[in-house]
Image: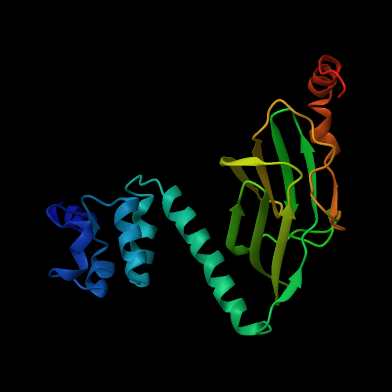
Length: 231
């Protein structure tokens, strides 16, 4: 009976250093030893230091110890994604292809809304694996840059947008969407107000109106314009 107990759980043997003590991996597997404090954090510790065989064994025993492995699964999924990205770097062109990203805009009386797609067209698939993102917001313009690897091609997205009127950079909000887009919310300096256009100077060829977003502020803008005398 005592032998059967020792085969399963070893009291006093801590998960974090069990393979550094009297047991090596072969002994642990042969005796089917389970440390008394087996946890997802302990398994992650072995994964992060590259002890893959030890981590594999502990994962195989997690169910017996009723250990929840969601955090381990999430870590491995992210790890797999980053490994794929690094592997792709060996198979792409050295110089990236420059793309002016397609974007659309809408406004309320207090904010400007931009929807930037990591693609040359709004109706084309956006690049999901984006890195080195830079968003530089000044009171009179916004500049956006990002890199991406798509179908073994290195892409670089650049957008420079001079604004029709001033905005408050500190009021900027961003929201990255999983479908290869990023939304940017800009706070107007003069508010309430309605801009006739979002850009200053020449109209960007990759720009369009964000109609479904604009529809949300239709009544708000109408009431403001009715209450504001024409100059």
